[in-house]
Length: 400
Image (tube, rainbow, N blue to C red; front, side):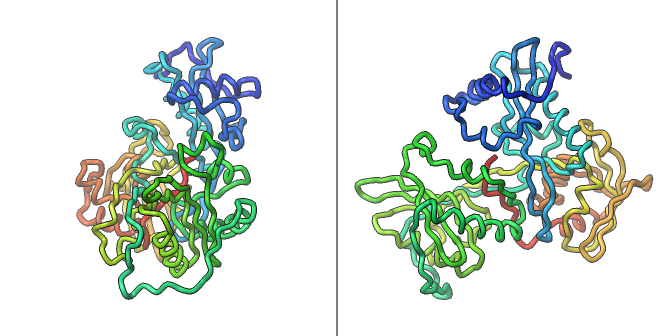
């Protein structure tokens, strides 16, 4: 419960400096001043401040985005960001007040999905966000590695170009690719400047970005210079074809004076299976996108499914009570219908578990073993698990 002394409202232009200061203090940062790159994408009519009297003590915002869901469809989604509570004001219900305001607002406007990146892993499940909706892999590998004999590298020319020349091409390629990759997000104009911010303060001691174009893809990376061998820190590698993927990885692996490549990439990145010695590729898994179903009856029909199923789900959702109760999920030919029902439940779960499974990132059968899902009718959890899976692991390559 939120402290009764607290109030919440959308911010005004005059709130922005204090809004930024609270964010910086909460994240132990000096880099969120008034010139912050995040101001370029902040939608002030969707940004909220929590106040204790006249003191601003909490911040949160929603960015209007689309996310690609299974079936290559685009679903409207609220990207929750800049959630912070001023030090000294925790455990007063500030975050709960912001989360409730956001989710109830999305429900009223018909935005069926919310999503976020969690700065701490123990917070957001209580608000109905499902962890590991997409996973990410921190990949490190030495350069000069050979591909196995079956990998063909074409003679396509890869050009390093200026940022100004690269961006128009990258925008076009990214827009085509993101519509085919589950978990990828739409980008508005200023998103590019945020994702590829390149001021000295953004570089973390690395070089400026290098931009390299392939006829069917691109790669963006920084360099950590060393007198012996440098490291390539890949920011984005986006390809329209498998051939471009092999070509661009070969380009990186053969880079003169470079000794190692690091890349936050998809967990099922096929480079592990392309090289001749996969043990030299080190992967460390982590959670990426957390996803929240705002409206079950609107969200579940947005995606396609891998197999037919007919199950009654009993869903618990104390934060958004309109989701609680029994729902019949019927899938035929990949298309879903979702209706209220009084029939006995085949499966019981909370809304966070459904969010984890929505993009196919977590199997409901795994959540059953974790005591997050209860099966009442034998076989239904396995059938639902198969129905929710896609042909590739969902992946969200950008933090917002």
